[in-house]
Length: 231
Image (cartoon, rainbow, N blue to C red; front, side):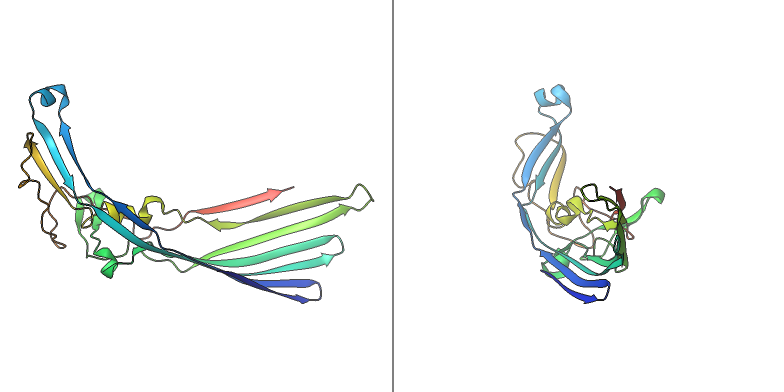
């Protein structure tokens, strides 16, 4: 949803607008089973290092972006125009449309100090930011007015925010716990008994070993890029 309005007052042209977008992707994974052997010897001797059985999963994600902006184009003189403005950017932390953020279980703590625990189910991937401001400025100067040889110098710059979420938009709810729960058997052999490959009962406070977990820096923020040009 895009909308803007413009007002003209003397040498100033004021513009105000909004840009609102909602993405609702649905992503599915069929789950899989795979085997790990320790080289050719393990394959010949039918000695599995590990057997993995992962559950099918589905992610129903919501991502919302909102930009509000104001800018002024000022004809400072017949040959000089200035344009400057400010944008407020809001990009939501990806979240599941299922109840309680899909009961997603993450790991929290300090990896550097080997102090990691299971986090509360449904917690957001990282802390939502509300203070992303992006200033912009530009100028155009007609410094040669000779007919047929007019020359204009243009320059501009500003701050731009990128979403920068990559696989965080779906993978935690596809392959993370509990959606992508798994059974892992070590030092087994083929064929694997179906009774041993059964997926464990979901336990949000004490997940079984062999599952995959995600963790993000609580202060994670979108990448910022300063751009400028002169022509």
